Length: 79
Image (cartoon, rainbow, N blue to C red; front, side, top):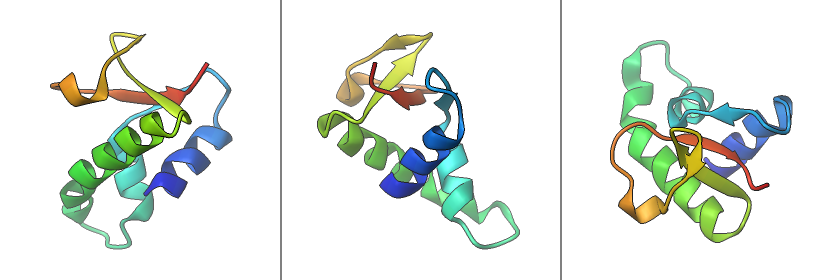
C-alpha cells in the first residue's frame, strides 16, 4: 500500500495530493466496490509514511497530526 501511495504521488505534480481511496483502488484487483475494505489499510499506510518522513496528511490544505485526524484526509509529498 505504501508503494501504491508513493507511485500515485510520483505520477502527479510535486504539489499534488491523493485520497486514500486512490491507493485503495490502485491495489484492489476486483471490479466491484471491494476496494472500500482497503480504506483503513490505506490510511494506516499513509500514517507509516508520515512517520518515515515521506508524506504529509492534510485536511483543508494544512498538515495535521495523523493520529488525531477524523474525516476526509489528503496525502501529499513532504515539502
